[in-house]
Length: 257
Ligand SMILES: Cc1cc2nc3c(=O)[nH]c(=O)nc-3n(C[C@H](O)[C@H](O)[C@H](O)COP(=O)(O)OP(=O)(O)OC[C@H]3O[C@@H](n4cnc5c(N)ncnc54)[C@H](O)[C@@H]3O)c2cc1C
Image (spheres, rainbow, N blue to C red):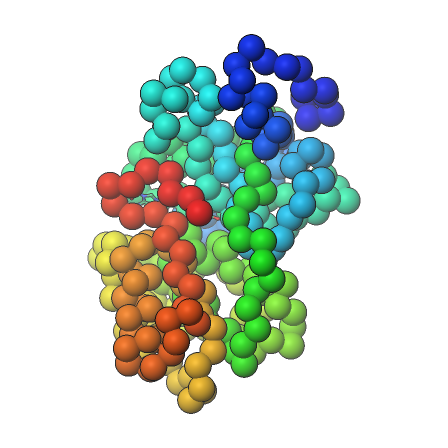
Protein backbone atom coordinates (compact mmCIF):
# COMPACT_ATOMS: atom_id res chain seq x y z
CA UNK A 1 0.00 0.00 0.00
CA UNK A 2 1.22 3.53 -0.79
CA UNK A 3 1.35 4.58 2.87
CA UNK A 4 4.05 2.01 3.58
CA UNK A 5 6.20 3.37 0.76
CA UNK A 6 9.17 5.71 0.66
CA UNK A 7 8.48 9.22 -0.60
CA UNK A 8 10.35 10.06 -3.77
CA UNK A 9 11.71 13.55 -4.37
CA UNK A 10 9.46 15.47 -6.70
CA UNK A 11 10.45 18.00 -9.37
CA UNK A 12 7.97 20.37 -7.67
CA UNK A 13 9.68 22.04 -4.63
CA UNK A 14 6.26 22.67 -3.05
CA UNK A 15 5.61 18.93 -3.04
CA UNK A 16 8.92 18.32 -1.25
CA UNK A 17 8.19 21.05 1.32
CA UNK A 18 4.53 20.29 2.07
CA UNK A 19 4.21 16.70 0.85
CA UNK A 20 5.55 15.50 4.20
CA UNK A 21 2.21 16.48 5.77
CA UNK A 22 0.34 14.17 3.42
CA UNK A 23 -0.41 10.52 3.85
CA UNK A 24 -2.24 7.89 1.89
CA UNK A 25 -5.18 5.98 3.27
CA UNK A 26 -7.79 3.51 2.18
CA UNK A 27 -11.46 3.46 3.17
CA UNK A 28 -12.32 0.32 5.14
CA UNK A 29 -15.91 0.91 6.29
CA UNK A 30 -18.79 3.23 5.43
CA UNK A 31 -22.28 3.38 6.86
CA UNK A 32 -25.00 5.78 7.90
CA UNK A 33 -25.05 6.85 11.56
CA UNK A 34 -28.23 8.90 11.11
CA UNK A 35 -30.37 9.79 8.10
CA UNK A 36 -27.83 12.48 7.12
CA UNK A 37 -24.56 11.43 8.72
CA UNK A 38 -22.08 9.10 7.02
CA UNK A 39 -19.36 7.33 8.99
CA UNK A 40 -16.18 6.82 6.97
CA UNK A 41 -13.45 4.63 8.47
CA UNK A 42 -9.96 4.93 7.02
CA UNK A 43 -6.84 2.79 7.32
CA UNK A 44 -3.59 4.76 7.22
CA UNK A 45 -0.54 3.68 9.19
CA UNK A 46 1.29 6.85 8.25
CA UNK A 47 -1.52 9.20 9.36
CA UNK A 48 -2.29 7.44 12.63
CA UNK A 49 1.39 7.29 13.62
CA UNK A 50 1.65 11.08 13.55
CA UNK A 51 1.24 13.17 16.71
CA UNK A 52 -2.46 13.61 17.47
CA UNK A 53 -4.42 15.52 20.11
CA UNK A 54 -8.16 14.80 20.57
CA UNK A 55 -10.20 17.47 18.77
CA UNK A 56 -7.80 17.73 15.84
CA UNK A 57 -8.96 17.31 12.27
CA UNK A 58 -7.94 15.75 8.99
CA UNK A 59 -8.00 17.57 5.67
CA UNK A 60 -9.14 15.26 2.92
CA UNK A 61 -7.52 15.99 -0.42
CA UNK A 62 -10.19 16.25 -3.09
CA UNK A 63 -7.75 17.83 -5.54
CA UNK A 64 -3.95 18.17 -5.15
CA UNK A 65 -3.33 21.71 -3.78
CA UNK A 66 0.25 21.55 -5.09
CA UNK A 67 -0.79 20.90 -8.69
CA UNK A 68 -1.18 23.77 -11.17
CA UNK A 69 -4.94 23.19 -11.09
CA UNK A 70 -4.91 23.26 -7.28
CA UNK A 71 -2.80 26.45 -7.14
CA UNK A 72 -5.21 28.15 -9.56
CA UNK A 73 -8.28 26.91 -7.66
CA UNK A 74 -7.24 26.60 -4.00
CA UNK A 75 -10.88 26.57 -2.85
CA UNK A 76 -11.39 23.25 -4.65
CA UNK A 77 -8.72 21.22 -2.89
CA UNK A 78 -8.89 20.22 0.82
CA UNK A 79 -11.93 19.62 3.05
CA UNK A 80 -11.85 19.41 6.84
CA UNK A 81 -13.36 16.70 9.08
CA UNK A 82 -12.83 15.95 12.77
CA UNK A 83 -10.70 12.89 13.50
CA UNK A 84 -12.74 10.41 15.54
CA UNK A 85 -11.92 7.05 17.07
CA UNK A 86 -8.19 7.55 16.47
CA UNK A 87 -6.72 4.02 16.83
CA UNK A 88 -2.99 3.89 15.96
CA UNK A 89 -2.82 0.28 17.22
CA UNK A 90 -5.10 -0.68 14.31
CA UNK A 91 -3.76 2.05 12.00
CA UNK A 92 -7.32 3.36 11.67
CA UNK A 93 -9.45 6.37 12.41
CA UNK A 94 -12.82 7.57 11.28
CA UNK A 95 -14.66 10.70 10.34
CA UNK A 96 -18.35 11.45 10.37
CA UNK A 97 -19.58 13.62 7.50
CA UNK A 98 -22.86 15.50 7.55
CA UNK A 99 -24.67 15.04 4.22
CA UNK A 100 -26.28 18.46 4.06
CA UNK A 101 -28.49 19.58 1.19
CA UNK A 102 -25.91 21.08 -1.20
CA UNK A 103 -23.23 20.35 -3.75
CA UNK A 104 -19.84 21.03 -2.12
CA UNK A 105 -16.92 18.88 -3.26
CA UNK A 106 -16.44 17.53 0.28
CA UNK A 107 -20.12 16.61 0.39
CA UNK A 108 -19.87 14.80 -2.95
CA UNK A 109 -16.79 12.93 -1.74
CA UNK A 110 -18.47 11.93 1.53
CA UNK A 111 -21.62 10.79 -0.27
CA UNK A 112 -19.86 8.66 -2.88
CA UNK A 113 -16.70 7.27 -1.25
CA UNK A 114 -16.75 3.47 -0.91
CA UNK A 115 -14.88 0.70 0.86
CA UNK A 116 -11.56 0.33 -0.98
CA UNK A 117 -11.43 3.95 -2.18
CA UNK A 118 -7.97 5.44 -1.80
CA UNK A 119 -7.87 8.76 0.06
CA UNK A 120 -5.10 11.29 0.51
CA UNK A 121 -4.97 12.89 3.94
CA UNK A 122 -3.36 16.04 5.38
CA UNK A 123 -2.73 16.32 9.11
CA UNK A 124 -3.65 15.71 11.88
CA UNK A 125 -4.01 19.49 12.21
CA UNK A 126 -5.54 21.97 14.66
CA UNK A 127 -5.15 23.01 18.28
CA UNK A 128 -2.54 20.98 20.11
CA UNK A 129 -2.87 22.62 23.56
CA UNK A 130 -4.70 20.62 26.25
CA UNK A 131 -8.41 21.41 26.58
CA UNK A 132 -8.90 24.25 29.13
CA UNK A 133 -9.81 23.35 32.70
CA UNK A 134 -13.13 24.69 33.98
CA UNK A 135 -15.74 23.89 36.65
CA UNK A 136 -17.98 22.61 33.87
CA UNK A 137 -18.02 22.40 30.08
CA UNK A 138 -20.73 23.39 27.64
CA UNK A 139 -20.80 21.97 24.08
CA UNK A 140 -23.01 23.68 21.51
CA UNK A 141 -23.41 22.97 17.80
CA UNK A 142 -25.38 21.68 14.83
CA UNK A 143 -24.65 18.45 12.95
CA UNK A 144 -21.07 19.33 11.87
CA UNK A 145 -20.16 20.78 15.27
CA UNK A 146 -21.61 17.77 17.08
CA UNK A 147 -19.22 15.51 15.11
CA UNK A 148 -16.34 17.20 16.91
CA UNK A 149 -17.52 16.78 20.50
CA UNK A 150 -16.81 13.08 21.16
CA UNK A 151 -12.97 13.30 21.05
CA UNK A 152 -13.01 16.33 23.38
CA UNK A 153 -15.37 14.58 25.79
CA UNK A 154 -13.19 11.49 25.90
CA UNK A 155 -10.15 13.68 26.64
CA UNK A 156 -12.04 15.39 29.49
CA UNK A 157 -12.86 12.01 31.03
CA UNK A 158 -16.01 10.65 32.69
CA UNK A 159 -15.74 12.86 35.79
CA UNK A 160 -16.06 16.16 33.92
CA UNK A 161 -19.32 18.03 34.42
CA UNK A 162 -20.77 18.63 30.96
CA UNK A 163 -23.80 20.15 29.27
CA UNK A 164 -24.78 20.05 25.60
CA UNK A 165 -27.11 21.94 23.31
CA UNK A 166 -27.39 20.26 19.92
CA UNK A 167 -29.25 21.39 16.83
CA UNK A 168 -30.23 19.23 13.87
CA UNK A 169 -32.77 19.27 11.08
CA UNK A 170 -35.16 16.82 12.79
CA UNK A 171 -34.99 13.98 15.36
CA UNK A 172 -33.84 11.51 12.64
CA UNK A 173 -30.71 13.65 12.22
CA UNK A 174 -29.77 13.84 15.92
CA UNK A 175 -26.04 13.10 16.17
CA UNK A 176 -25.47 10.42 18.83
CA UNK A 177 -23.06 11.54 21.52
CA UNK A 178 -21.86 9.42 24.39
CA UNK A 179 -20.54 10.89 27.59
CA UNK A 180 -22.34 14.22 27.43
CA UNK A 181 -24.15 15.06 30.70
CA UNK A 182 -27.35 17.06 30.30
CA UNK A 183 -28.30 17.38 26.61
CA UNK A 184 -30.93 19.60 25.02
CA UNK A 185 -31.87 18.86 21.39
CA UNK A 186 -33.41 21.50 19.12
CA UNK A 187 -34.69 21.01 15.56
CA UNK A 188 -34.75 23.37 12.59
CA UNK A 189 -37.64 21.59 10.86
CA UNK A 190 -36.99 23.31 7.51
CA UNK A 191 -35.50 26.58 8.80
CA UNK A 192 -31.98 27.56 7.71
CA UNK A 193 -28.94 26.45 9.71
CA UNK A 194 -27.35 29.81 8.86
CA UNK A 195 -27.49 32.49 11.57
CA UNK A 196 -29.92 30.25 13.43
CA UNK A 197 -31.04 31.53 16.81
CA UNK A 198 -32.21 28.07 17.95
CA UNK A 199 -28.95 27.29 19.72
CA UNK A 200 -28.60 30.68 21.44
CA UNK A 201 -32.23 30.53 22.59
CA UNK A 202 -31.81 27.01 23.96
CA UNK A 203 -28.57 28.00 25.72
CA UNK A 204 -30.41 31.00 27.21
CA UNK A 205 -33.04 28.62 28.60
CA UNK A 206 -30.43 26.24 30.01
CA UNK A 207 -30.18 25.99 33.78
CA UNK A 208 -26.42 26.47 34.19
CA UNK A 209 -24.42 26.99 37.39
CA UNK A 210 -23.99 30.64 38.45
CA UNK A 211 -20.26 30.73 37.80
CA UNK A 212 -18.96 30.66 34.21
CA UNK A 213 -17.70 27.41 32.72
CA UNK A 214 -16.01 26.83 29.39
CA UNK A 215 -17.98 26.65 26.14
CA UNK A 216 -17.00 25.00 22.87
CA UNK A 217 -19.33 26.19 20.12
CA UNK A 218 -18.85 24.67 16.66
CA UNK A 219 -20.66 24.71 13.34
CA UNK A 220 -22.11 27.51 11.24
CA UNK A 221 -20.16 30.70 11.99
CA UNK A 222 -22.94 33.21 12.60
CA UNK A 223 -25.03 30.85 14.73
CA UNK A 224 -21.93 30.34 16.88
CA UNK A 225 -21.42 34.07 17.29
CA UNK A 226 -24.98 34.39 18.59
CA UNK A 227 -24.23 31.83 21.28
CA UNK A 228 -21.07 33.71 22.27
CA UNK A 229 -22.97 37.01 22.42
CA UNK A 230 -25.51 35.45 24.76
CA UNK A 231 -22.90 33.89 27.08
CA UNK A 232 -20.74 37.03 27.23
CA UNK A 233 -23.34 39.79 27.24
CA UNK A 234 -26.22 38.15 29.10
CA UNK A 235 -24.51 35.63 31.38
CA UNK A 236 -21.36 37.72 31.93
CA UNK A 237 -18.90 34.98 30.89
CA UNK A 238 -15.38 36.14 30.01
CA UNK A 239 -14.95 36.20 26.22
CA UNK A 240 -12.00 33.79 26.44
CA UNK A 241 -14.26 31.19 28.12
CA UNK A 242 -16.19 30.79 24.86
CA UNK A 243 -14.39 29.10 21.99
CA UNK A 244 -16.32 29.54 18.74
CA UNK A 245 -15.19 27.33 15.86
CA UNK A 246 -16.50 28.37 12.46
CA UNK A 247 -16.81 25.10 10.54
CA UNK A 248 -18.67 26.57 7.56
CA UNK A 249 -20.57 29.64 6.47
CA UNK A 250 -22.28 30.72 3.24
CA UNK A 251 -19.97 32.09 0.56
CA UNK A 252 -16.86 30.43 2.01
CA UNK A 253 -15.44 27.13 0.80
CA UNK A 254 -13.36 24.64 2.73
CA UNK A 255 -12.96 26.54 6.02
CA UNK A 256 -10.21 25.29 8.34
CA UNK A 257 -8.28 26.49 11.41
C1 LIG B 1 -12.01 22.17 12.16
C2 LIG B 1 -13.22 21.67 11.38
C3 LIG B 1 -13.75 20.43 11.65
C4 LIG B 1 -14.87 19.97 10.93
N1 LIG B 1 -15.37 18.72 11.21
C5 LIG B 1 -16.44 18.27 10.50
C6 LIG B 1 -16.94 16.94 10.73
O1 LIG B 1 -16.41 16.17 11.55
N2 LIG B 1 -18.03 16.55 10.00
C7 LIG B 1 -18.63 17.36 9.07
O2 LIG B 1 -19.61 16.96 8.45
N3 LIG B 1 -18.14 18.61 8.83
C8 LIG B 1 -17.07 19.06 9.50
N4 LIG B 1 -16.58 20.31 9.25
C9 LIG B 1 -17.30 21.14 8.29
C10 LIG B 1 -16.93 20.86 6.83
O3 LIG B 1 -15.53 21.01 6.65
C11 LIG B 1 -17.69 21.88 5.96
O4 LIG B 1 -19.07 21.59 6.00
C12 LIG B 1 -17.19 21.97 4.55
O5 LIG B 1 -17.58 23.21 4.02
C13 LIG B 1 -17.67 20.85 3.65
O6 LIG B 1 -17.08 21.02 2.38
P1 LIG B 1 -17.92 21.06 1.05
O7 LIG B 1 -16.95 20.94 -0.06
O8 LIG B 1 -19.07 20.12 1.13
O9 LIG B 1 -18.54 22.54 1.01
P2 LIG B 1 -17.75 23.89 0.60
O10 LIG B 1 -17.28 23.88 -0.80
O11 LIG B 1 -16.74 24.16 1.68
O12 LIG B 1 -18.94 24.93 0.71
C14 LIG B 1 -19.91 25.05 -0.36
C15 LIG B 1 -21.18 25.69 0.19
O13 LIG B 1 -21.83 24.76 1.06
C16 LIG B 1 -22.11 25.39 2.30
N5 LIG B 1 -21.99 24.37 3.38
C17 LIG B 1 -20.86 23.77 3.80
N6 LIG B 1 -21.13 22.93 4.82
C18 LIG B 1 -22.46 23.01 5.05
C19 LIG B 1 -23.34 22.41 5.98
N7 LIG B 1 -22.91 21.52 6.90
N8 LIG B 1 -24.64 22.72 5.93
C20 LIG B 1 -25.13 23.60 5.02
N9 LIG B 1 -24.34 24.23 4.10
C21 LIG B 1 -23.02 23.93 4.14
C22 LIG B 1 -21.03 26.46 2.41
O14 LIG B 1 -21.43 27.48 3.27
C23 LIG B 1 -20.86 26.94 1.00
O15 LIG B 1 -21.79 27.94 0.70
C24 LIG B 1 -15.45 20.77 9.93
C25 LIG B 1 -14.88 22.03 9.64
C26 LIG B 1 -13.78 22.47 10.35
C27 LIG B 1 -13.20 23.83 10.03
